[in-house]
Length: 242
Image (cartoon, rainbow, N blue to C red):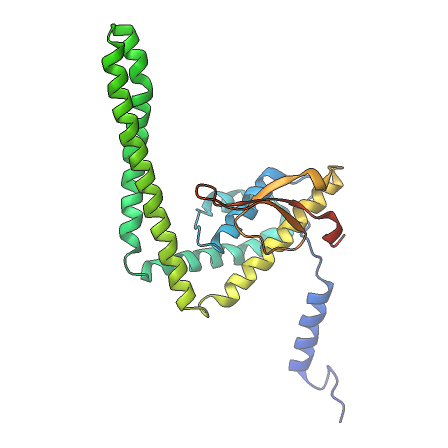
């Protein structure tokens, strides 16, 4: 016996969902003139969560709720925002990571004023007629500030490695949420390309940064290195869905 949508409500729901997925545009409608710098920054924010770089989404939340990217994405953003907080909240349950965060924060707080002081000491030495002594002190303080920054970077690297190891041993954790965020970033990348093209810009010359390179429609120009955490990419106009 052949079932129809009317005969079976579950079948109807599944077919409706499949139809909606099929008809969904590959990009978001973000209004007539969205801020593309803000959009590019938002892409990097969400993409970062897929590499365990948990930046604060609250400043973005305020602007998006005010309509910065239109009504369609505002509806999507409510789910994105909750997903970001759920993933970021999971690090509280990973042993040892809190210590790395505290160490990194303390080292950065220490390195900034000492480095600024080191930069000002030669000027003070020239004014007071003790340039050589102040220059030596400046060099020592700059060296200590640089060491603090290096150790801060090491603490941050240990933090990232701890998170990476945790999710590697818990592969199913947030599997669907991460997949969802990846799809959102993909649509946002297409949205950026769509509005750039709409403004008459040359997509093949437009460069931007990403934490991951597994998205469609992009070409990798530079890969991450020691102190560069992101990929430098540009659009592959031939692979865009419009």
